[in-house]
Amino acid sequence: MGAYVNVQHMHIQVVPMTLAPLLAAPLPVQVHAVAALGALLVGLAQLAGRKGRMAHRVLGWAWVALMATVALTALGITGASGRYAWIHLMVPLVLTLLPLAVLRARRHQVPHHRNLMLGLFLGALVITGAFTLLPGRIMGAVAFGW
Image (cartoon, rainbow, N blue to C red; front, side, top):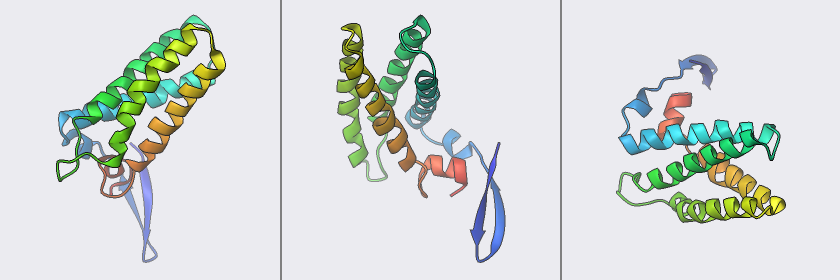
């Protein structure tokens, strides 16, 4: 595992990364996090790889399945109050845009497909994922110990 440096009052403290907060979380949170990390890795491979080949299609279907899993498992995750947060608005968006993006690819409307998939990757995965690293969040505790 890695570590980060926490500078407080001119004192440097190295805090090791730990999976303990994630392993202690409810199962929907664990599945959600693993699917999101998988979608991030597959998405990066898709962006770096050649398009239109069989590998792109296979990885693309894997990415769609992972993103659907991320969206659906989000429905089992609520705050301490038991209510959904604003970020849950991404669920219907993702579940609507994923099949639309696949349809665009099947119809060979490549620019539309690319824009939808890139938008989902950046908006529904990278940007929303960054919020999970904030203090008080489980993934923030995993990555940074806060």
